[in-house]
Amino acid sequence: MNLIQIKEQIDEGNNLIFYNKDVFKYYDELMNDYLCIYFNEPLPVKGRLIECINRVSNRKRPSLKRQTMAELKKILVNELHYEKLIIIFNHFERLTKRSVQIYQYLNSLKNVQFICSFTKNFKSDVYPFFKTFILVNRDEYELNCGKREINITYTIYGILSVYCFFIYLKTASSMIMAMVLIGAGWFALIIFRTLMYAGGRS
Image 1 (cartoon, rainbow, N blue to C red):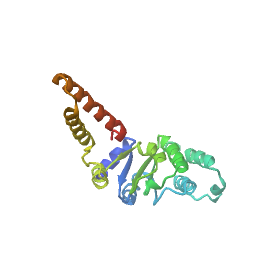
Image 2 (cartoon, rainbow, N blue to C red; image 1 turned 45 degrees about the vertical axis):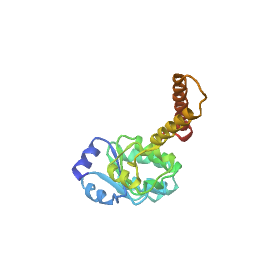
Image 3 (cartoon, one colour; image 1 turned 135 degrees about the horizontal axis):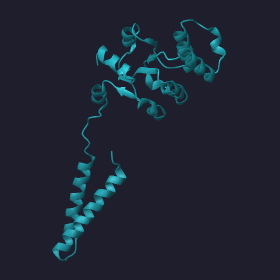
Image 4 (cartoon, one colour; image 1 turned 60 degrees about the horizontal axis):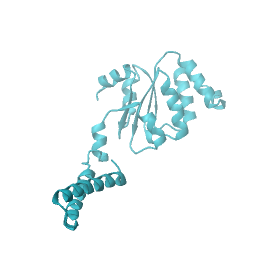
């Protein structure tokens, strides 16, 4: 995605996330056109909130360190007014359950957007926040993380079911052939369904 496309996504109000990229270069490219702030990582979240307030107000306020998180959020909203702020940071995977709540709150504001990157898997607590992003280089992520590997689970289950079908035919007592075939078919289907539920439907 080039700079023009990134600006289009920003103008549409979308959050962007990259896999295994340093997003500092986007800060460099966007800072002249947008109000941006860059962090190499999102923690500690209180310090990041203070940096956001200082960036928006364009001055340092030492007294902010004594404020609570709730007070800092309120100050940031008041300072920001209707101006758009783009928060840019690396190491999305370092977000914690507590810190992600702060960032999700900021994300709920219409005039705050994010451009982030990650290099590792992250905790399940962070996933709802991740879902608000467009993964820009999805192909690269899927290639490196093996997301495009062929899922052979059902194939294996099918082969095992057919194998059980023939075992059933071979061991069935002397009955009418039609009944044997029907019984074997049902037996194979039961085996397939059992394996599917026992092994998962990935």
